[in-house]
Image (tube, rainbow over the protein chains, first blue to last red):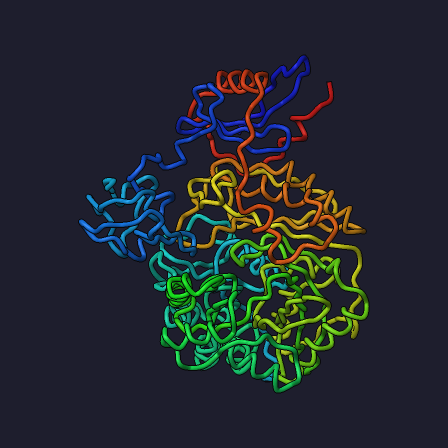
Length: 124
Length: 493
């Protein structure tokens, strides 16, 4: 962490900041921020698993505790497909559309990484 | 009570900030410490502070922190006199307490009988009813079949709360609002209970939907006297996990305070309770209902310590040795204390866990500020355990000043590397309902269920970001532990 001297609206101030693996962390007006380090000011979105309709991916690293979805099964929007656990809490991942399970990459007990695609649905 | 016995070496069967808290208390008492840890848990403050460390198993808690034999063998191997279980994990496991005693060591905490009576929420409720205490209508039968549980839900009337019999801390606990969702939630509660506590047994209660969470800290000393250290309020909860706690409660007048304190100490006294314990109640429409008794040190114990001027961990150790406590017979609170739990989670994504390497931290010290920290810069926050990485506790003369101090302290706190819930805590601390002290356990869901919107940067802030980015090279994260940035960082121009 460095304390960078910057000019902000005509006033000199120091900002604690560091850059690591393509992201810029800085503390500004009492808040910790993280943004893409490209300097675009875009809030680091890489944290967030990409959201595409029908693609159910792990929203966090964790363990699969239950697989409800079955290959080829027809599911309704809102129906639970996979249950994950991280930091001792359960999270249910549910279908975001009415469809059919086209791909299933979830096994009970498996550790999965952030953004890993667990279920692919095709709309019906 | 066992014969007085002096300890030389204490084993800590826990991790994170509570392990640090216990190690410090031991060090101040001149005792040697041994940390029992899992194979992945070597990057932590406690690991570095303990005199000795012993790996007792793999990452999964069931293979390490929840494995009774591994903990007992680990402690025997280093010749420990006693084991402090902290909170969570095996802290409320009567079998563990017994195994420790049978191995010739002392369990720092209540007796195995105490844990058995209160640790099982069903027999606890029976104890309260037998002693004329107030309880919530519900079902706590042995028959755990789904049809029976669903029928009982119907009888009690929705909303119903389903809890792990061996539980605590919000795990294995679900609110069932209607019959349509009951089966799924009961099954989920049973799985969580099995995974967190090793028992899938649950019980049902009528859900009080406009209640405050009030709990009384009690303590049984080695002579059999039970102290009341008055109450804490922990109504700010999300998914039944506490976020902000304070002592005393802004909601009690002296009459209610005396009443609850008396009920709690009586329940403990009748059970010949030893060491630290917390009796949890719901308060609705001026009436208390017993919820559960936690037979352990509580996460939020520091707020009581600050307003009462005690050290509960040292008191536990001294009591386990059979020594007397230097405490007054009756406690009076001084000022007001608030605790905020810092969770590694993304406040802009409805609290999704955030894992990764802590790159830098700064805990802004000051009068009446206390930080309970388990991890330092360079440590990895893993998905295997609890998301709580630290606690920030403040004390001031009045509640409003304590709130102001907390807000200021959090605004100076730096955590880089993982997201934290600090922005959410700031919103809560500024909310009218919290400020007025009228919040109930529904406060969070009522006002914060939608999560926080990430604030947009202004144009000048965007150019500031560009400036910062231009001045730093990636990998500049020479991971810096503490170091006080402010002494040389802020000089008024």
